[in-house]
Length: 79
Image (cartoon, rainbow, N blue to C red; front, side, top):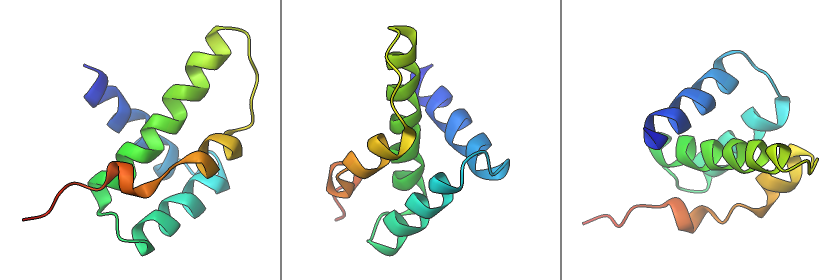
């Protein structure tokens, strides 16, 4: 279920243009070599981390999560 939720949050955030930083980070990751699926996962992980921190009462701006992403972590090994 987590995989599907990551996609749901990321796709919804992009389509609804909820945060300009999402689209900027997504475009940057794509330009940096991530395929669409990998970039969606990176964005989903940022959103999930922010939601988890909010649940704990910690408020952090999304830009901090976005800037902490290492694109290589999400890049699948290509054969």
